[in-house]
Figure: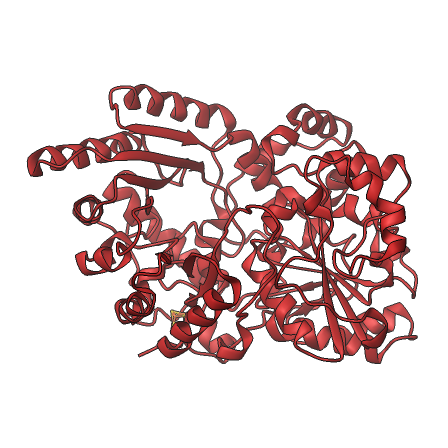
Length: 592
Ligand code: SF4
């Protein structure tokens, strides 16, 4: 039941918004806990629109785990879209938690999920709209502890002045320990609380700036949700999501997710099957997705699909594997996924040439990519989506030419086999040098270099009828690099952008590039210089005090191997002694 006070305060404003259902909560699958009867209150704050946030798998896990504890409560807050934000500001209303309708200031901990750097200004605006001081040093004892987790905290430096503590690594156990400790220390001085929580493994407190090891969670049946809030309207991923495995042993050299989530941990087949059955039954979804950075790398993927296909046969419930390796794409697997509906199949060659794929350690031959594509077409898929990255280190125009070249070869194979040409979409992003990867030292291409490459590809593409190229905005990618590699000085830039109205900037329509250039001038920054700078091995990186376990020397040796197009075998095949298992006293977990 929505409380009367809330309705009196907000109802008339919500009614004026484009999508009121974003702001009312009470979704099927949400918890309904009594705010006044629990000891600890955690507010998960997602600095993006409702429909993006509610699909985020990480936040579903934290929400479920905290709420499973009788003594705690976890509520959610998403960034209001601009129409509602303006209404709230005009009427001097603060943000509120979606379920309890309480103000953020009433919670013990407010945790931001930082999925991408372009959400930084949104975090600051959400703090302001929550009546919480923007700067950590200005917060009083009664203010909630502001934490942040997610992939972007791999370099916390640019957000350090605004966040009290960062959660490094998996959030399953650490958020509960954190909430527990904050509740126990209630009434203590803020700096004492921060000092204490800095002793929790996986918590980095900027005030103390201690070297921090990431936290690693075990993937068990009980720490995976089987129900989560179902939005009132279609969200980005309207399906049940079951996590197969975490981490990726392929170690693509540009991929941050692969390196910061090591070692690979697989869920047991039995757990996956049971979780899927329960999740689908509890939510009523007609599609389930088996989530992983590389879904078909799971040791028992075929057995899992067989068992689930058998269970859901004739029910109209479909499976999707969001990210698949082309070299593991077997006919049997294609057939297993093809049981009910033929949707788009996604393959990530990442680079057009084999040379370039060796440089990035993708280790996929052209034949493997073509064969996987043909297998899909033969099994009824006629929509193929390829992912490519351009502007990669050591890339040449010969490498680029082979992106459309690959598609022409797929078409040729279709002709030979008498198959109809598929509809192909190539999603082409721009390389961003990310912290904790072998390419963290590499330069990003300048905007003009990227524009030249895009024009080159567009001309080649015009000759092929069944393909569409979608290019990621190179200016946005440059800003992403600027924030990703920035040091604490970049916080001044973020603050200025926020003051000038930067908000929900990962949305093209909200990104005001001119504003960036204006702030660049005012603060005397050089965005392109930071993004395009190549670092030496001995350069002190702003994220050196954050330890994801991988030895820096190993990352550098991988960068050197890339220079010579030498590949590294996946750690499932042979341990490469990257340092993770030794440094963090852990080991990979394969399901068989
Ligand atoms: S130490 Fe070996 S097994 Fe462990 S993550 Fe690194 S490469 Fe894999």
